Image (cartoon, rainbow, N blue to C red):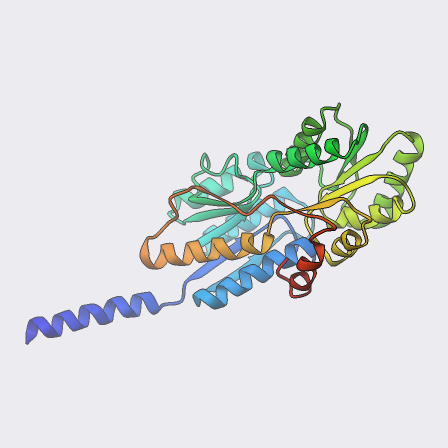
Length: 304
């Protein structure tokens, strides 16, 4: 009888421990108000509901690596059950991420940092390989006959975006021509691209690295014979694709980048389970005028 009672108490104790709500902190370099990152956060929120965990989403007000490192440090000090981070600049964030690992806090990275995650002690990376995605974009434009292109970079210094541009020009087989612009300044982006096209009328291809740049560039190329592609989706990008104003958009399925890390950390905290592969690829996939209609409904629901 005593053994049965002790066994029952042990099972109850395990049940209570597993029932305690797990707390996970998600820290990204992109703000939830951004069209791209709002979808990431939707994935985070859905995972929190599905896994019955508490999740706190934090991000600097602008692309600010010093502030992002501070947010990671604050998360470490609060001793959560897990931390999710994007890694746009490994040098700037290395100290903070490794401090989390040394403190025994499981870390999963998302979106950017596939090439450095394992070195920093990150358990799993969820995202796409940026250079290969850019390479695919370059090859598509080359197949379309593009000879002279620019890559519009709205976050110079973000290693992931730099890799996208490098892959793009390698895929095209031409010399790099990066046009730096300022995120959050759509008029400035539009004017910068218009000026570049006026200065060099032979430009016949443009790649942008996200909707925040793609949407003003759509205005700059209106009526011009430009092969235009972008990374990532937004309602405006999908509309332009359906109207054949753009050639393609690279879909890295960012909803999964928010969703899967929370699921992974929740299962790791509860059961010690981890995927065998240290990198889980969510992209790249290509949305084109031919398949844009299928994606539009999911975009309205904040999933694509």
